[in-house]
Each structure stands twice: as C-alpha cells, then as structure tokens.
Length: 431
Image (tube, rainbow, N blue to C red; front, top):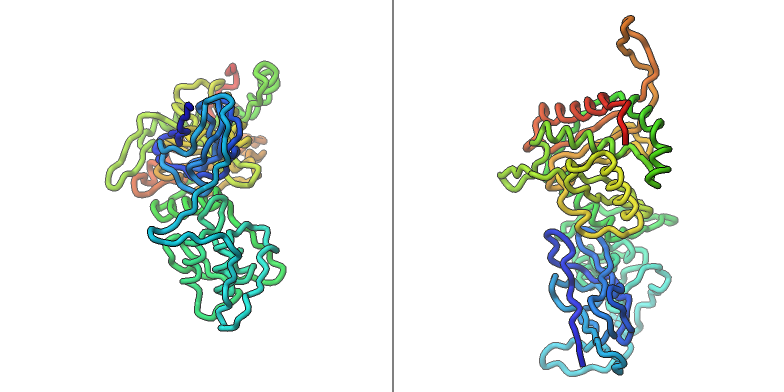
C-alpha cells in the first residue's frame, strides 16, 4: 500500500501558517493530481490547496478551523488503485486518565437554581454555533441577539469556546440582552446599542483583518496628507484616441490606473526615500519598486495586489499586469505572493466618484497615494497670445505619508512630481 502525506504548502513570503477553512473532499473520495482538496486562509489571502498526487483520500489530519504550520501533514492519500477505503472518523480527544463517555444529549441546568433548562432557541439565527457555544450561551442566559454581536475568531468568523468565555468574563453581573464589544486583548470598548428592527451583520474574516490592520496603521504611523491638483487633459485625450485600437488588438481595456502607476514609479526613482520601510529605529531603503493597487471586491471589501518590479515594465506591460491582477482579485484567484512585497500603494478613489481622500498607509510602507475623480473645470492657461480660460480635465492627488520618516518637504515634493509627470504626458505616445 503506497501512502503519501499531503503537506501544508508554503504560500508566499513570510507566511508560516494557515487556517483550514473547508475540506472539499472527504475520506474515501478519489482525487486527481492538482485537484483542489481544501480551502485555507492566511493573513494575506484565501486560497485552495491542490493534491500533489492522484489517489484516494485516506485520512484527514487537521480539522476545519485549525491553524496548521507550513510543512506539516494535513491528510493521507493512497496512491494504490482499487484500494478499499474504510470510513475514517476523527478520534475523540480525551484527557489522560479520563473515562470514555458515550455520546448523549447534553442538558444544561438553568443558572437560577430551577430544575428546567433554559429554553432559548438558537436555531432562529442564520449564524452557525457549535453545541458547546450554544450550551454556554444558554447557561449564561445570553439571548440570540446578544450572541450574534460576539466577534468570532474561528473559521469564517465562527464563535469559539474561547470567544464566548472571554465575552462572559467582560459581561457585567446580571446583564442580559446587552452586548459588550471586546478588543482582541480583552479590553472592553463602548458597547453598541441594539434596538428593535436593527440588522446585525457579522464581519467576515477579511473585514475583521482589514479593520485590525487599519487601526494598527493609525496607531503606528503619524499620518500627514498633502494634496495637489493635476491637469490631465492630455492623458484623457490620448486615452480616448488609442483605447479602441488597444482593445481590438489586445482584447483588454486601457484604464487610467497603469498610467498613474507609471508616473508614481518615475517619481519614486526621483525620490527614493519614499520607497522605504520602518523597522524599529532602522529605515530600510527598498531596492525594488513594487506598487500595490487597491481593488474593490464584489463583497465590498478591498484587497491590494502588487505589481512587482513596476519599473521594469513599459506602459503596455503595466496595462497587462494591472488587468491580470484586477481580474484575478475579483475572481478570488490571487495567490499569497500576489499580495506580498509591496513598497508603495495607490488607491483610485475616483472610480467611486470621490474627488479626493485621505488613505491609510499599508504597513510597513510609508506612503500611499489616493487618485481622485477626473472632472472638467474652467482653468486659466497660458497661450502665445496671453492668458485664457479653457475647459480642462483636472484631478486631485492625495498623498498620505508616515511623518516619522517622511517630512512635509519630501511628502509634498513627491506628490507634486507625480502630478508633473502626468501633466507632461506625451500626446503622440504609442502603445
């Protein structure tokens, strides 16, 4: 009998572990080589793990919700054709010396001393709760609406035993039907008020991750934002002139994002101290120019894939790279490495009709540029016959930077240089 271990693969720079979200196969299922066996989540991205061999899944070694180190075995696969597979069940976990307890219904006693159980029905909630969590909630007289306010740290935001016990510890004695929001370190926050008719929406795992990182960034870096208005009339005219031929030739759209990314890349070459990271009291000047771009997902969340070595691409190459990453981001097909290694980030808030914004820095980077909507405006321009008023396409650039290492002169000069490159765009350029 030939059996091989399915190993938790390495999924990107600095990723040492992953959480198992869902097993797509069960013991006894046939698996083709490179067929997806399970879904996992890292602190970068959710992804599927393919099988390294063809065969039959013999045993699952790690449960859903479990955090597994890279390189650890997570399943056993038999490569023998026609091998009979006996059903595999997960062994019961018991403490040393404990007697085996047969499965039986559990009835929790009410905490008020009466002999009847608490009759709260948690089946009315659309959210999943394990029997253990529901039993603890019943014992503590936690109503369904209150239980739904508890942030879960398990897979897909599920409430774990640890989550509900921490909540109970923070709950005031005698408190019923009121929630207390709790930080990950147990510090209570100001509770939200819940009234009849309010809709309670549980954050998904990505939203909780975004929230935590944004709070951390504001806590770590003193943010300063500088604003510049750029005249992009030439770019708008050029794109209108070439986009249809480009679409016909390449089979892909020509958006403004690659053009903005090229200007940012050239400005970084002029001001390399924007392309740095902070490590304690050390400033790390990055050799590579890896530009991240914020992409809005259908779920409403944001994700930031990275164009690696952006300075090595011409404009056509940047268009292909940007379109590829955007497409795969919206189809949930990004790999962890697509999100790693960014040294500077841009966010095109103009796609939502916003004229400017004050973006939050992606740690450990020190700068991020928000690009506003392009608007037609009357403007004074210089002509051979003197000043004149004309309709121009204008756009605001908002540069947020870490004031620990980027002073106003550098932060302001950098965004001004980006605008200069945009305004000097060659109308006769080919692509």
